[in-house]
Image 1 (cartoon, helix red, strand yellow):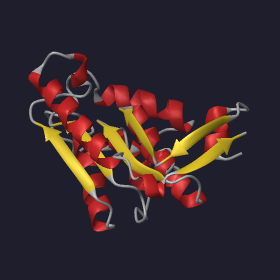
Image 2 (cartoon, helix red, strand yellow):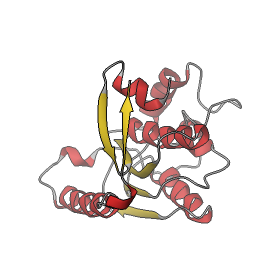
Image 3 (cartoon, one colour):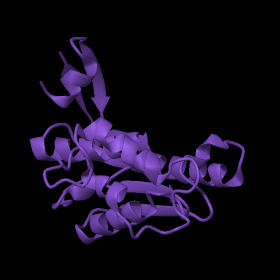
Length: 193
């Protein structure tokens, strides 16, 4: 079954497809990036944008010992990360055979992926892997917008009235509006069965 068929189950749904964006935060950001890789590799449904908010991209962060002493001390800690990755992988993190669809930071080839907006707090455990993934996307020729919010920990958007959350929301809306602006000549209708 295709990705879209899986998402829409057996329902018959028609969509005017100008592009599909994938988005997620934390583990959902890692899953969104993994879905973009999978769609590219299968040649299915043109994902046109990745919106990754403090994404968990690389299981190897859970076994690193050279992390910043300031990162990952609030909300999502190294202990949380060590606990969570085996739930996704079915094995301890850091092993040699982890799929890049589960841990996109392990993907060797990032070329031909859709443009991305990556947003992460400066005190987030995932800041290093987010910055590295953005750099690797850029080197692969993928347009990438990177926002690192100084002083913000993982999950800082829970403080929805905070200025840093409003800044992330503003940056998200601008990036999504730009990525998904209508291009009627490129639209097509697809039916998921």
